[in-house]
Each structure stands twice: as structure tokens, then as C-alpha cells.
Length: 81
Image (cartoon, rainbow, N blue to C red; front, side):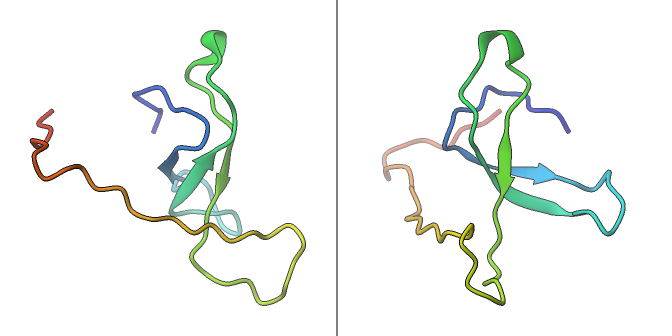
């Protein structure tokens, strides 16, 4: 599914990989956007899939993200699209 809104570097979005075939990733995964917004390529982004599974070995290219959830203020009205 294409992106229907501009994404910024550092955003975490869900990416649907269901169009691929095993042994490739074939499910929805959270991804982090690495590329900056480019005016001439607004529907293209470089992403890295995230996992909630701890790797079996300590690998030099694995890093842990600690995220605190961001909730809207109680006074904020829910968005209705």
C-alpha cells in the first residue's frame, strides 16, 4: 500500500510486506523512516524494519530503541477522517 501522507525522518509507521513470498518478510511490521523528505521523490522513503524479538546473539548492527508512548492531551478532540 502506498503512503498517503508525507513521512518525516524518524517517524515510525506500519509497512505491509504481504505482497512478497517466503522466505522474505510477508507480514506487517513497524518500520522507522531514515530518509529525509525529498521534494522530487515525496512518495519514496528509506525504511528499516523494527522487531520486538530479541536476537539470539549480540550482534554489532543491532540496537535497542526505548520509546515512550506519546498520548494527546486529554483536552484534544479525536480526529475524525
